[in-house]
Image (cartoon, rainbow, N blue to C red; front, side, top):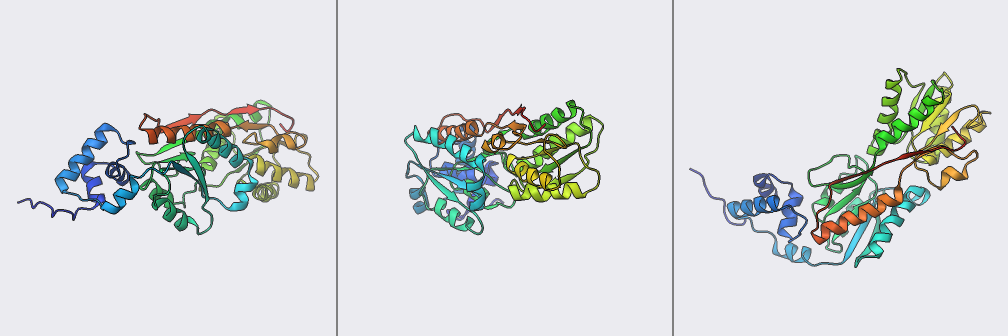
Length: 337
């Protein structure tokens, strides 16, 4: 005999399991959000009725109040945020779109152990939604952010969930195109300095490099991981040169790391663009400040920021929004390769 649940004892997780949706979807239905598909809305309402789920009234009242504010969450060290031109472009694009709306933007740099503080702020009902501009596989607190407010990610999340929204560039194709460019110029001994292996952008650019090398029937001279910083690029370049065979060309997965690579090459008596071809990724202000100017892969960071903000505003307004937006990249030829 099936025993009916006692009124009010069901949990939000049980409702999600019964409805076949995520916990965040149930939370949004309970809080009156319009960012839920009709089929999911019906499934959640049916599960709530069947389980006689009763949400916390105080939390529901708090969450239903519109603040007309959104949070821009940066899960990075402060020095990396202020030192990387990528973030400046992303924030500028987001700011353009938010500035034309009725919303204001609050920025949270959730570095070190600040994730708990950031999560507490977002749970406190101070914002209607959030944009996450960067993330690592270790940033598990971001999953909990998506349970509280609608979230748009800059870049594919490390663990994509059915309800996730993200705006990314085609990092795999960018890495492939960068490597194909070097191959087309006759280079065969090619190394790479990849991005962090706990970030989808780093993983995808390395995958594109490996795919292009495999298509050409070649093995990399060296693969060294960096961390998307200038110092990380310098250390990785040192390891590449110490690994044995000197490469003819190197694909460096960010312009900042390429600047670090330039420094090490010159310390070793090698001239970028003459002795070793160097390819970057970003097309940031760094690429044109270097000498020779850096041949690089352009990712449309400003456009990416605009799209991220537009998707979140669509979600908050109850308008249809694409769960995944992928922007193209482009090789920009200059003097280093």
